[in-house]
Length: 286
Image (cartoon, rainbow, N blue to C red; front, side, top):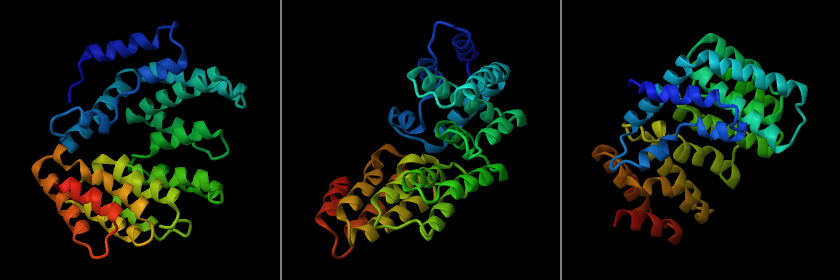
């Protein structure tokens, strides 16, 4: 995709506007997410939306690399001088530094990736570490796996933080994302009886990873149907919430729409299905 040069210049002008507060600038420079873009279309073509957004981030990262690097390095130096600052202004600076880091990594340049790897060390502040992990999360590189492994080892005994790790794994656009999610069902810290963990892993994949959940082969839909039926045996309320990503099948192209309705029919036709799940799935089909 060729990005309109005026978008690049608008970003450049915003980066050079000293009147803008960091928290506002971080929001201003964020591209809409894939789900927001898809919902704005009459038909959500998953691969095209993902590719266009990825290419736009890469183009912005490459064209403005020096600007992002200067901004990130300056904000990171401020963070090193006052990392315990919890003021609104400090949080805004961290948000803007993470936004710049995301574009540095999206450019594909080694210098950008190296900054994210350095920031991902698990002894840093949580906002900075999570920003670095999010920037690295889609990369098909060993540095991504090493950073996530170090984070897991540091926080595996903190349930709330470990949920963030499960959600990162579930939300990765890497080709092996679904296989990773399946493997994590057997993780010693995962249980279908833990609703927060279910939302982080299964919900994170189905609702937060469009490119892999909506894979053209329908494997993501089959996986979600399996988990909904497993959950329904003992927690119908959570199972019903997990069904929601299948409900919007009309937004997708014919093959995906048919695969989603096939998954819904398998759920509806399951014996001993709860009223909670049946109501949502059957209404979606009708």
